[in-house]
Amino acid sequence: MSESRLKIFTGNSNRILAEEMCRSIGEPLGEATVTSFPDGESFVKINENVRGHDVFIIQSTCPPTNHHLVELLIMIDAARRASAQRITAVLPFYGYARQDRKDQPRVPITAKLVANLLVAAGATRILTMDLHSQQIQGFFDIPVDHLFASPVFFEHFAKTKRENLVVCSPDVGGMKMAAAYADVLGAGLALVAKKRKSATTVEAINVVGEVDGCDILLVDDITETAGTLCAAAKILREHGARSIRAAVSHCILNETAIERLKSGLIDELITTNSTPVNTHGLPITVLSIAPLLGQAIQRINSNESVTSLFRIKGI
Image (cartoon, rainbow, N blue to C red):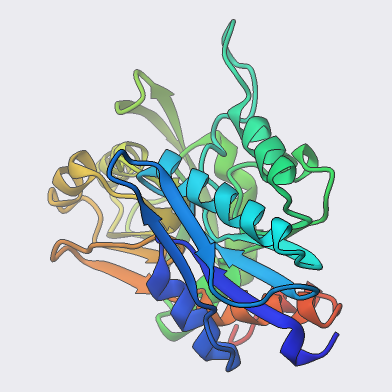
């Protein structure tokens, strides 16, 4: 497939990331009108010919989640009706990913519903990053390219190595990710056992592993209220941790999170620009995933493997 057959468009969720992705691979961002009518209905018009083209539509389903999701669905439908040859939905952040199973009676599996909606709209491929649970890939009957932000984090940590580093998971579910980080960084491993009291409140119960006098790196895939991170940081401080940094792939900070981070329990929060991040003057470092996603788009467009993007440099 020749280079001229590639077309990249974006919705309104994270236009800055889309523009940076296009600059990183030397491709123009396609012209599309994506607005809302006075009653709130979304309106989309693709202002370029996409017939027979390989179309990529970039949209993180971050807050306002439902609005951005519908924008994406309508853009996919517009491209399908304009006879695009292949439509790849690029979701740097896949919203609703935490609703991936029935853990209570009479609740939906919304992550699967969103997958069905994307396919029904006309997506023929998905490109996403750091899903909350990897089995979400199985919710799709179309190819899914699942990237990891970890190479971007590892490159950053290679420049800021700590001698007495311990990687810690703030909950049991993140142990596999924490173990991978500890292995690459040559660090120790610890775990904070927690109990969730509500959607916004978490209680840390115990620490497994040696953290006294150590520099802690908390790793997680997403934070919204910072409840899990701050509860873990509090008990780690009580167990003698010297410093605490947190590496989180997707950062969707609300007012509750800002207030919790102001407490100073976490010395630095390191995240990516998969969603727009307002640092509010807090010690938040934002790493760019634009080159990584841009390379993935190029490789998918030219029908090459994306496996090499998982290789880690600088460690």
